[in-house]
Length: 470
Image 1 (cartoon, rainbow, N blue to C red):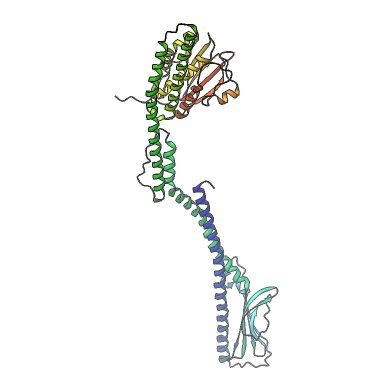
Image 2 (image 1 turned 45 degrees about the horizontal axis):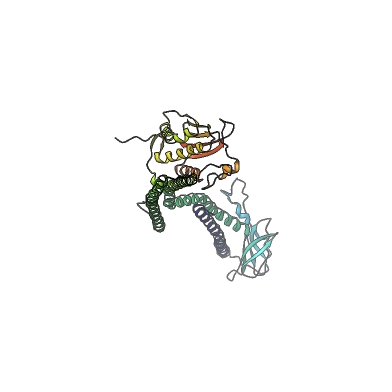
């Protein structure tokens, strides 16, 4: 089970449910035991009452119990309970479950209860016992009176005891079972409350991007979570320091490498070869330096895109103006290949973005399109605005990409075998990195404007424009 909340809730409910079941079973056993003792005491008391009553009657009437008395025995007739329920003014229905009998010392019946379903047999063994009368279990108590020389036997149906025990136990069980849903709700609320700090930590971490590595700040953290929060803050501090070291290294590398490359290119261009062979060597040197400089710039750009702390600030960026700036920068390459470039962008479309990031993204997309279309090719830049998205697409009429190439084109240093243009295979990797870090979507498709070619569509959230501070 992956959820702590579900684990705690389920295990606690199951544990309490088992405890309730055990308490019901123990309560039933205890009620049974106490009921047995209570009714056994009642049987003994009834026998003593009978002895006392008979003693008074014999003394008042002067009757002497003879061992050979054969007079017809006296019967105590239980009332018929006809009214609905368990009792009425005449008695209780359980009287049918009670019986007694009095015998002389020789076993002559003297007095007893009249119950057609119960026939108590003479017994001369005092004490408690169980008897089966008409296939039903009865609890009996036998007492011998030395004063009156009589045997008294009081009997009670076991059904009474079981019935009372079941009723008491069922009441207890029903109360506990009614409380079970209440306990479940309380456990759920308590577990939720107890895990609230952990959920808050999770929420704060999930809202952070890789550009926000400030320590987690909690006014009150439970003791169990203080170590976790401390470890997370230590990790964020270490990551922030590592990113800062990487940023400094990138800046230093840019300064240390760009200058020598520029100097080598200047020296190569200042060479004055006196034959065609040396002229070709000079051209190769300059071309190689240009490729190396481009690769170096792309690697620096990719590193900066991954280290997104460099691009934290967002602003309202006019998409049309930014595209015009980029196409102006690339005008030399566009004019050299005599490319027909068209834009379809509303001048009022703005996005809330980091301008430098978006500029790098668009420059790579447009540069790729210009680079891979043939001479006198066509490139179209289009932007569409909806309530939630701004979809910016760059289409060309180049050779395009097949499905396998589309699946790998965002990988670093990947170059399609069908593309023989100069490049380092990092441009679309930079675009993908910026899209991932900025929450943009990117999709590749065959262009619908031309017979062949590729369309790259970037979807950006249409966020409310930030108000500039005066």
